[in-house]
Amino acid sequence: MTVSYNVDVIKTTRLLGFLKLECRWRGSVWKQTLFELLVFTVAYVIIGFIYRTDLLLNNEQKEFFVKFAKLFDQRMNYVPLTFMLGFFVNIIVGRWNDIFKNMGWIDNTALYVATYVRGADEQMRIVRRNIIRYLVLTQTLVFRDISMQVRKRFPTPETLVAAGLISKKELECYETIEHAHSKYWLPVVWCHSLLYQARTDGKIASDVQLNNVIEQIRQFRTGLGRLCNYDWVPVPLVYPQVVFFAVRAYFFLCLVARQSVDVDGHYHGGMSYMIVPYVMTALQFIFYTGWMKVAESLMNPLGEDDDDFECNFLIDRNLKVGLNCVDAAYDSKPVQEKDSFWGTKPTLLYSADSAVQPIFPFLGSVSHFELPPNVNEVIMMPHQNQRTDAGNLITDEIQEGFTEDEHKPFLVPKQVSVSVRHVTQDSVQSQTSGNSLINRFRRTFSRSSTRFLPTHRSVNKPLLVKGKTFGRFTTSTDKYDEEAEQHDTKGALRHPEHHFKSTPPDAALYPLESIDSEKKSVDKKK
Image 1 (spheres, rainbow, N blue to C red):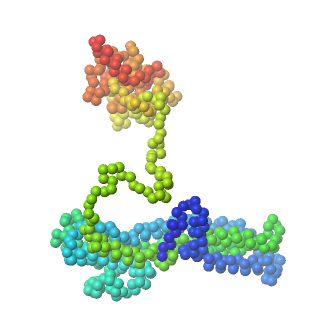
Image 2 (image 1 turned 45 degrees about the vertical axis):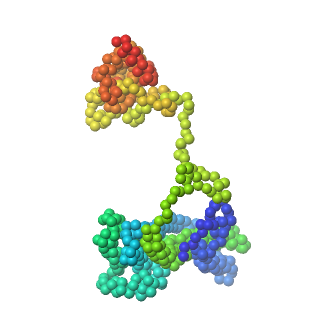
């Protein structure tokens, strides 16, 4: 009984489609709220008639009514309808969605049975068909107890025999099992027995395939079990009671509070002063009551409302699809031949109407971003959060408890460089040196921060501490050449004597290609 309207909202820009949607009756807010709105309107008119005539109230009583109505109108927001309805509808829609996902679709199980249970003889056809029929029988037995639609269709077990879901002998076997609770599980036991026998006879190739089929049956049965749980334990009764009572009590008070009363301290008896409050209150009634009706209709989606699930259709559909899959379509395949795109670039055609519509393929939101072309070098270095307050790297050894003097710096003779991208020299300087006031004092007054080798020539050599590059420093190229012999297998030079903690302000930044060329020239001189 589901109401489908997707065809009317194909394009959100078509106003006519949404107007057509508003004019629908079946499953609409008008059908849900019309009767209650008529009752509210009649009650509102009766109270307004009593208030405006002299038949029942004298002037003193009218003044009391005016004060009484004003008092109610000023405090109507004490009832948190929006808050209560929002949470309640959210819970109900969540349950409704989970119930729909566990209704039980036979497709996957039928495909597994058709693939793994082999044999084209009559006996194996019977086995495959009976497995599907037993699963649909299990679904029907569950739906008979939780859905009024199915209960009316199959009121007695004999109607299941007449429908062909179970034979008389199977019904006798079903009824011989004495059990105080529901026996939804019994047809599943029959399915497992058939599968085990097929494995014993070699009709199922391996235990893995048998386990896969049983797993699909387990998932099917688990979904039906969740439906039973939802039917057994609904939303606690107090919650819908509070929400439904709050909405109706709110509009019962509106019958008095929203009457046409004094405006600016003066009484107005015109019809317009009665119509305007009623129209606004009626709109509010439709909105809030319609919102509440959403929850009411979704609380039991297996019922007989306009938007409840089509349980009978699902039973019929599962039986037809499952039997066709394991029998009529068993081991069937078309003649294999080359496809239409063989040896060519696949290009699908469009109809004349759809060929003119634009296509927007997926592209990363920043895939088009390019840095300025004047950047000719990328310098890779550690993040600034990996540095100490003095601007040095925090190595893994220091974080694990080693003192800073225990680790030795490594000189990297080869700079990590990329053709185009990343930072300028200024940004490198800002990352390699601390800029806080405390760091400046430390660099000024700390001896360790000013220990630099005598410089014959200022060159740039990145410093690697346990595999991490940091900073720039100034050192002697002669000392650098002497240590070149200590090159390890990773291409890094260990500096045995000196530990650098900051970058002098006059240190220059050069590409490491220049360092390599200088090193080669010194080697030639030697």
